[in-house]
Length: 450
Image (cartoon, rainbow, N blue to C red; front, side, top):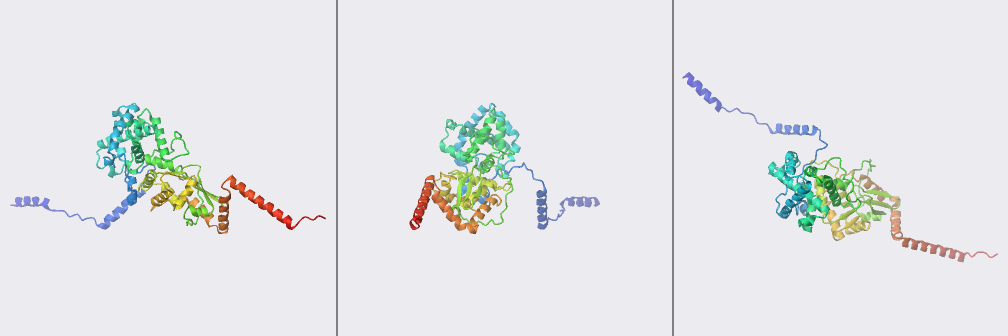
């Protein structure tokens, strides 16, 4: 009996449950705070690149611009793969890839393997959401095909050879825009790996830089010039475009201005204060400056072309700058906000056109003004970017003792010094006035004949 009782006791033991006290909500809160503190204390890698990810929701809330973030012709990468409207482009990808492989001097297996061997690193270039539904094998195939076809598309576009693939002009135009959408990016490392295996590596790198430079509307720099200057390889083509458009950062210490309240509202008010517009010598977005010459001032702005591609280009650059893991100076966002502060009406756009700062391929000046007013909505610029320029403009506009003189002299300058003929007419009028005065003097006071 005792043995049976002991056996029964042993059999009962496993059925007993040990109660572990649950972690309280307060303890979870404190644990999360501690983990966050430890993450912040970890040194950040200077070479880390932001992930390729979705456009931030706060930008997608603007329904008018949602179309600017979606590819219209070609889907590149995992986010929009198999998108219905991009199926036509899928038919061209194999032909483009075949051409690239043939001219690379390598076998398809060799190029595929270099992507396969680096798939873990390449996968890490994307936000987890982008690759969650893809196996490594499928993702390798996707990046291989998109990488080869993208490189060949760029090369053929710059050499005017896309007609041989029977790709229509409208498809080419839309595809060119699609290559610079945030959600449509390939890791630049994919392009590098494929270029390094190609016999045309140097040529491919040159045409990429030229392709980006042309997209950036660099009218003042010839194609085939120096490479785009970057301290380290870009994350993707969109970052390369941003670097080219912004130019090198201004490392000179800017003079601080205490009063940053903006008293002027648009270009018309600057014009009334004797401020004239002129194109800056370079076409980088950071190249904005102001020079005051007493009664007149000159605001230099980088030349810009406004066409159908401007909206998608600038809005995707803004979206990239707003990515939470991208530490940057909001250079493009600040430029758009600065230009938006100058443009209220069609007359402001007209003044930019007359000064040679803006070329309007969009339509009416009203459309351009509306576009800038819309894309500048709810953007948060870097207050330090154009601090010096804002300060100088304010000093010029708000100097009370010369306000009336400035307006009068500016109008005088505008009316009488627009052309050599106007200057000659003014000098002639002054000469006639002077001779008339002398004649009047001698008529009233004839010389003595003693």
